[in-house]
Length: 350
Image (cartoon, rainbow, N blue to C red; front, side, top):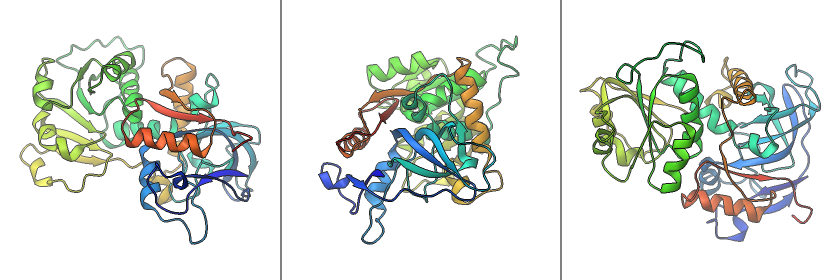
């Protein structure tokens, strides 16, 4: 089968950083489904792993953690899917990735693909959606609205408030929608470019502030001085002092990035709590509740088909080739993207 891989941790402007290759097609067993990959999307974790994780000796490493496709074979213990099912998933960080024509994935972290979406539109969603959902509702436990048709019209003053730092990226784009759809929170996103500000407002942000300025000063411009929750999606180390300033006493801070160091003592005065989200934790450690990601993706598919959420696709770069994938990695490394980057279909010339 065709795939895209690397043997050395090279800068993305080197053509050998990601190469078109041919490898053996895997065989499904146990609880694995074999998926014919139709479309992929690209996340910051892809380039971070490409830069740092060595490939097996004399072999190619195949990465990628977002895909949509069709089940072509199932293991003997599979009960959730059948051959021919259209699915979407983020996969397992410890296994061979989605930058291949076929991929093995444990059925417990796979969801049925939204019927109303194309493969590329669906591929844009899994990793960021799981991250955003788990952060909001498992880690921070942001209250869910009584129902989507609730008559409970809380005033702005009584609604929970949440600041999302770096909200225009992939995780922030779906997080904003989940907050708008499932909660009554006042949503404050941060962005600096005009296109990113416009993007967030179309997704449902109540306010958009500029993270190039002190966050506490920008927040006050909205008429809100402190928030109940902060989700920091990037540059947490840079914004840490301002985040603490923005949080109410007993507030909650959630983060997903990789700061080299954080002074946890700074959280004590306000009794602030710190929450990490790493969506691969369930699959990496085979947790008893691993199947929750299957349920989560199915629920999101239902919401999408009902028109409550929309795909966060923003950049379509063509077929799944090494050249196009290098371009995607470069866009992410240079922070040139809002929303998600997708590639669809395998070129005969790859």
